[in-house]
Image (cartoon, rainbow, N blue to C red):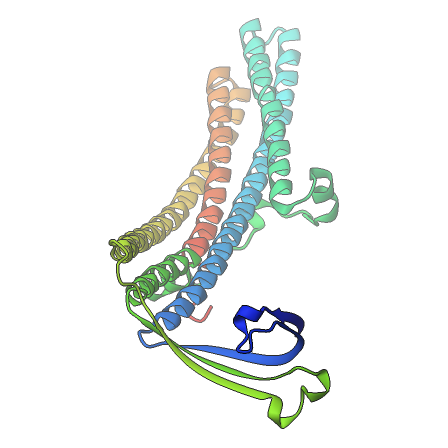
Length: 366
């Protein structure tokens, strides 16, 4: 630093004003002794706050992944149901064609013909809604993937994957250790928030106590720049400062009370997050188990109804049953096939939900 100063005569011992130059170069060091742990607690709170934000980011990422998987399964289910309905429409078109031939030949009345036509149009009317659902799910999946529907369909290789061809992961246990929940990012985020709140109490408590600061000054000062680095120009200073509140009218105590209240709130939030995690895992396990049972029961129902329809068609052609019995068999089979598709979707979704509920799988080392 270089400066030029004028000293008035009133401030001079000789009563005469002087003007001179001053050149100085100095380094200052200040250090606060962490007597009460305030700085350590601030550092602890800062580190935990960073971890909390990282875990919150991981929680959002896990939710997005789960949404992508669930939407993909919904899309596959919608596509499968659309194919089932299209196949049913083709079958009922054939039924209507046969009934038209029989009606023209005088073998059956107009009632059976109109019933076949009505059933055909009723089934055909389901196609627009199912196609719309497929397109909407494609759009939803594209949004989650950050792409347009055209880009998603063009760049992602869906291949010929059928809903029934998707293989479930093996080794899903019926009982899971609670330690797996420690991987959930929402629990770890809530835990980090609790650490932040508790550390803030220590900071508030330590702020009520005096602080000790040590200072050191080392430099040179001279009236001429050529003398700035001489031994005679060297200057040195040491200092110790004690600072602390004397009368703050309860502000320090209020900060402590606020920190304690926030810590209590963070503890409640942590407990609620853990309880919610246990409940989500329990529900996911139940859904996973029951969805498997539902698939087995519905598949058996489809097989039985398919055989029933075969027999009904034979007996109808032989004239032993009426057209209504045949229609009932067709309706029941279509309903069961759609229900089986939904059950398969629910099984896959339950697996993804369990994966999410456990924070990334059920393997202990995952």
